[in-house]
Image (tube, rainbow, N blue to C red; front, top):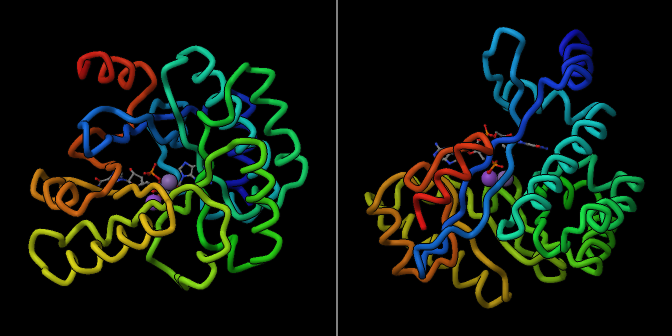
Length: 249
Ligand code: G
Ligand code: G
Ligand code: MN
Ligand code: NA
């Protein structure tokens, strides 16, 4: 309860900010947009990571204004930087927030941002809670032109069954599958299958948590489209991300 009221006042006081972690096109080795990740800049300047407040926050109604803040910041960033693409993370509650889903296209239009530049990342939690409802909402997002990807894919309760009818555009393969790529042949086999499945379903595939050149090389050999991880860049402030972006050019 105390955490929630501190988040509420922190939001009002402007203590939240977005950091940006690059995604890389593994074929061309070029930047391919970023994932926006929420950070809480406490009054003492300390940076509080989402792991320490998001799990509690996601179960309360306060997730709605927090996600609206993320959305607004992401749209402002996209408006200012027409070459950029972003993804934002949706909590399970966000997907079933009718007002949020209704407002998304309007907010994008008000910022003059093509919805194709703003991807929504969801987790399978939403699909487990209400598979039919989730599918309808995802279709609505897709009809408005927003790309949608399934985050942390392969962990948790994953069932491949729901993938067969899901109106999504991409899969983000959890970093657990990337970690042992160099040391375990079985990791490589599982990754190969996940990538082939994504390709067969016509989905973009992003491998998360790439930390070494060796992992990157293997993913390229396996024809993985996109990569994300500390090897390319950590989540950075907008300013650092834009600098990183320039030096790469
Ligand atoms: O940023 P970091 O790598 O520490 O993220 C930790 C977790 O917090 C991840 O699972 C990420 O998806 C989640 N997270 C970060 N920003 C947001 C956000 O804006 N909304 C939601 N719902 N989750 C977020
Ligand atoms: O669950 P989600 O993918 O939305 O959150 C991304 C989380 O993964 C963030 O906490 C981010 O800091 C973390 N992350 C991103 N890249 C790497 C990486 O290369 N290695 C590790 N260990 N964590 C990473
Ligand atoms: Mn994510
Ligand atoms: Na993830």
